[in-house]
Length: 203
Picture (cartoon, helix red, strand yellow):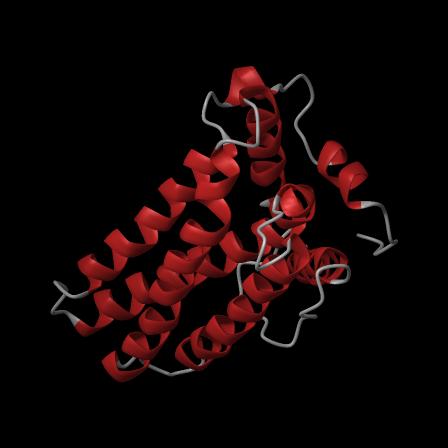
């Protein structure tokens, strides 16, 4: 049985890492390029959905798309946003504001994804609503957070963050949770609690 004690996020990320693993042995891709690659996968999958004519296949692929997007956002909130907020010191938008806005957009997107996931058979109307929210968020995050961080995070730190981001995937939920906190200081632990609770049910 999995007991939902509250551990510091950093401790949980170390705990869930396979024994003997290291940043250099698991990946040579830094966090910025890793997140960009996941963003591109979401875009590419949306384009692939448009080509599917079989209803059952569309339904299956759309649900995989939902899970991938939800997991990605939760990994960011656990292992990326908290680590980079202090490096985002834009004159007009401080780091806390940018991260808070990013989480707010996650929740808005998850609201649409949850509606889509709850349909007995996915509809294109709801897929489009989800995609509109997704594309808006990806563009903003890339312009306001990812690109500015390129010159501020050295290669070694980027590799460390990439490993922690991947580790967070073992803790986070792959289901939309629009009810989670929108506050940067609460969102990481909320994500871990929900993710571990879901994994406990699956045991």
